[in-house]
Length: 260
Image (cartoon, rainbow, N blue to C red; front, side, top):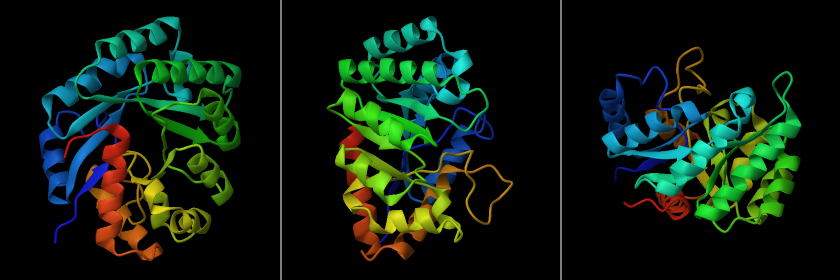
């Protein structure tokens, strides 16, 4: 029986996919990847991401202002986000990629937090889930999410924190994104977290072209490799592969209201 997957986090609007989208989608389909969510990172990419979703049936869009490029975001960018949300394009299914990041130099963290809160308010206003970035900020992010109390919640993508931190997000109603980190045996903490969380709280992702899997270091990541993330997850968990695949795809469609 062939298994089906959804890559819930792929930056398909960047190289190596640019001008090669149809071939890339065919490779993904051959690996069982039926749908791909593409989160924008800045206002300058909103229309490009929406155009990809309109042009290609497997592609769905999320729009957001990413903390890693905080200097690119101003009031006009936030206004642009709300204008796009108000138009509610058919395949716009989430707000993202948004969140917090203390990894980069000069993170402008006060601005990051204000921008996150503004976008969480928009998520509540337009009844959309959020796709969340978090590096060295899990505890702080959880406080913002608890205060926001979103009805649609969202996913903490590319999670690599502790089990306790993951459980706090799950208790708040959020899903946890399982990515290529688990393909590295040295990532024992993350592998243990993904083995022990409820299956009902997990989504699959690649973060392509970033976060290459073990064995593909130095190469752009690709959406078809979500199948290899899945294979590793099956090695870590006790459930049958069919159960894992079906539960995760149901989780994904429930959160993002995707049709089959």
